[in-house]
Image (cartoon, rainbow, N blue to C red; front, top):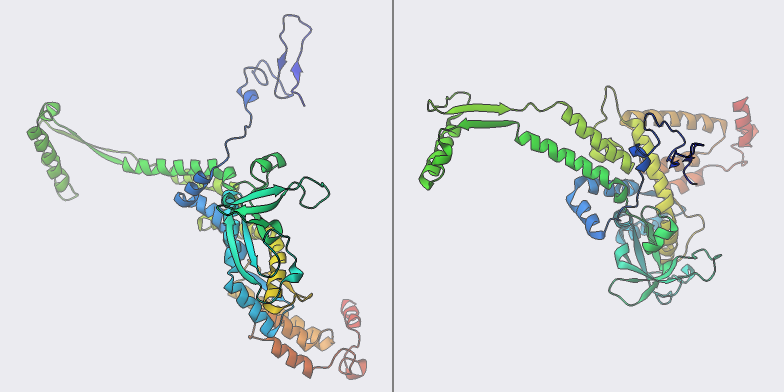
Length: 463
């Protein structure tokens, strides 16, 4: 939409194109004299791999922005259901062998740093690497390795523009690792992307994302400048100024320079709260001190808060500090941040695990059970007092529902096992199930004091 044009019936008035609908020519607002009308956003140069490396390796704030979210995303890892006994142990051992959580965290870091990364799966017996992967062909022991490569070393080869209705239309079909010649089909790569880009910019970026540092670069640099400026002021907080007669004449010779240097070495050596400084009657001495402003610490804190806001990471987590303010805990900010990390787990990690789990299950167990599921553990950890209170409330609820016949003892035991209490195992659950009656087998029928239909118990409870 074009900017509005100021017009007049007077032929001597020159039309002015303004940048806003609100105009006050008397005040100079909205006209040619208003500097805000010439303010505009421009697309700055993208961060190169060299600048990204420098910000990550040499700047602690840059490294914290990149590492914090991936580290938190895999910190508690996940709970697996649908596998029991030895199958569960073998699968978890395979996760450790292939370092799944660590590799995923590193892939996320590289994606945030460079704009993308990929994990290539080395799977035997499923055809050539350039062929699409059919997980049904994966046999026990087929998964051999997981190789992590950043976007600068994973080059797209073939882009499919033939059919817009295909899921990967406009996306590379095959890639090649930098320095290699063998193409790899995209179905054999687990992708991680950085900041989402518009399509025309994604084409220029070889269909990868952008570095998260591009949005926080200015904020990080400004915080660094503020920190450097404060450190520079500290070095000038106290300066001794000596006045020496004929100083420049004395410095013309080596002997005179040596005498002057020796003079002030002795002066600095003897200067203290106990000793006095002996001076010539023609010498002068002044100590200039600059009182550091108490507001400098708050100023630096403001710059760091801008970095935290730009990165989407709370100050308490980014800097590892306590929340400022009286009785402030930062709990609300932490909860919101954990919700964001949980969303990233669902959007970024779960699609990758959905593919990887199908390969690993077949490679480790020989099949992929339909009931297999996984869920990320909660990042929010209760205090000991809150945990004890919650367990007491849960036990009271379970006891009441057991007495009503709504649930069985095995249901309680399964929940306790999921909560990792009392070191219960699937074998323990199986023993409990054998010793308890099933629904409708006497113990839960009305004649035995229980309720045959759990819904009847719930109805009475609600009544």
